[in-house]
Length: 138
Image (cartoon, rainbow, N blue to C red):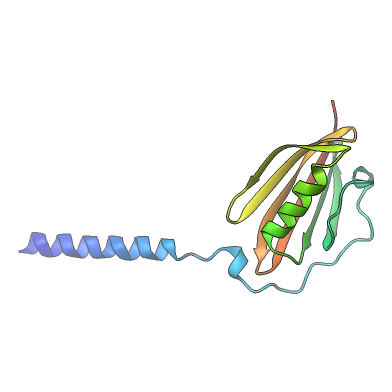
């Protein structure tokens, strides 16, 4: 009888643990805080780079020859992803790879003398984080 009771208790604890893990909330379900402060213009590597409507840049830096810009858009992940995929699929750019998951997405591109990636993520409900890395082409 003790073995059966121990087995039932073990199974119950395992079910609670699995249920708790399955109900974890993603960032997309959290209420957004005030948006980060925008910058006037990102550094040089983004001149002429597609910027979908609503994207706001908050930081820009150089890491060696690469330009990195971060920001956000007050829109859902799929909307921002579709905007970048469409813009980077148009000359002088071309999409080399794209991936859209439930809580993040990437668009890898080449063109205009550069290669790089746009990484998107659910920052909070209704806001998508944007990180762009542009490297000089080879």
